[in-house]
Image (cartoon, rainbow over all chains, first blue to last red; front, top):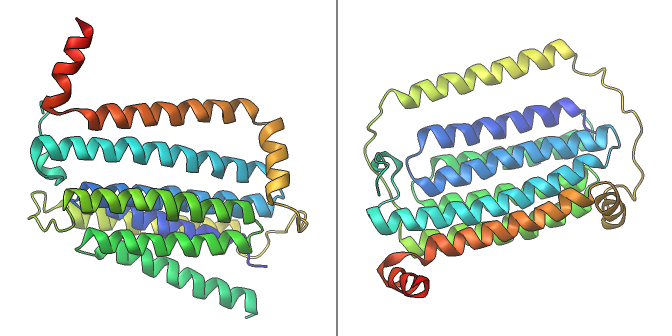
Length: 100
Length: 179
């Protein structure tokens, strides 16, 4: 039985790696993947606490987070494809206009 | 140090290593593959934590569907290599500074909370986290959110289709139909 603090630490490290990816990378797809990593870190913590307190609600929330992540990825990647069509790049530094 | 902790540290090492690989890969395809590895390791964590249903959902939804979508878009756009020079040079060290500060804050809070006094309230049985108990809770206590989720997925599907339909060919057809 691994103490919960280990899972909190691991989740924090994974979350911060995801944050670093969002803040430092310039490729919009890699930024999206970093957001997935952050969601995943939160999910890990949900499941760890669900086992700690024997509460099944944590699993249900992970289920919902996965659904929202799937919906977000579908729309987000569609947006990236649309941006790539109009601008010819997915470098987010190039996306500095509201008008397409 | 018992076997559980050794397993945990080995898996955590692989998970963090895969996440760092995703962060530092120059090629977006490698990033995606590292992320799949990370998701697989997290699925093993779910199994250890007594959540087999979530673990299988993780493998099929995250490592399966979502990452296939990512790889598909990367290869469709041919956008795997984007070197690009940094236009905001100060941003990278600033981000590192904030991240390290946050990690120290977490470590400090964990130290305050005390590392070993967390008692396990009740160790869940072996049936905990399987498909049947999850289904019971999902369809009894969380029925409305579950139904709303279906609407969310429908909206996401329609949104993706509308966004990618675009282009100069589709527009005139829509206008003709409107007339």
